[in-house]
Length: 361
Ligand SMILES: Cc1ncc(COP(=O)(O)O)c(C=O)c1O
Image (cartoon, rainbow, N blue to C red; front, side, top):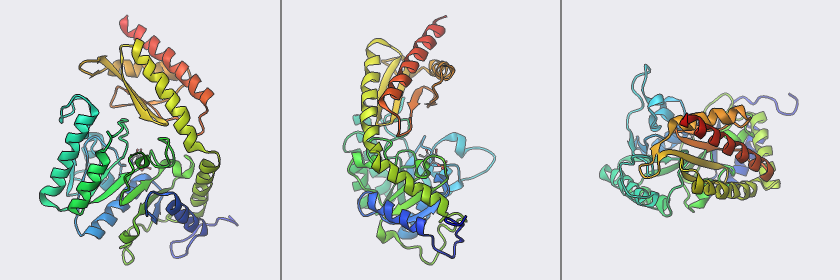
């Protein structure tokens, strides 16, 4: 209480200012103007408001099947039925969607992610250019399924945004601060967005703080209250975020995610040689997906097997989630050591084999 008292909105807060400066230092390109919120969903809403105010347009484009948070704006740009339908009624007007690349039954066709990514980028270019009236395109640079964007994909989307005066918003809430083996997952593609949204790990994974980081030219909200959250400059959460970033840098946790994650991906890819149900292994750093399929040719999802594997792993002390029903998604913390990762994969292999044996009975 003495060192980090609550800061009402009318006062400034040194830890929050230091955190904004630190984010400006580590964020890609010239991104440096920051607003804080307590959760990722709110930070997405701030990004949408900034994009609307800066462009004078209101429409957004985003991916079907994406998740960007549970608020009205975030659910509107999100593409999951679970958050879009229901008794709460209509969502935000002007929130349009395109199908993402790579999914099972991908409408773009193609025989691989590169082909479907190329077609998807052409579709985004077409939709943005058709009326030229979109405020922003918002997406996760590495789709959470996870799907790694094919080479050149984000550059094409960046070009389409520039050509049509659309702002590019990257939602790095799950991936920012090292998860994919680089500080931000857009660093892999060398593409800088106009607005980047951070959350989750920013508070060390235990305290609620998120951030919207913008190009300096987008500082257009001086006369409005885009943020105005009670805890927008909370010194405790800001201090936690500063410590988190300091530890990530000092302990070289981004490099750890790259090294241990790459080794895990290599080991997992080896499973494809002898386990027919492992249809694909993909990811980067500590965001890894193992896609279980009924049949490798059709890639039909093996949802029952995925669920059995997850429960068998839980019984053995390993927790992870499944995405789209059939993708075992491993997102270990940045501090995970090589030995811990080896142990986790031993458990996973055992769980998978026992689930396969069970489903044959
Ligand atoms: C990609 C993405 N965007 C936004 C959010 C929303 O963040 P929060 O739960 O902090 O509102 C999440 C949370 O799961 C997420 O994964």
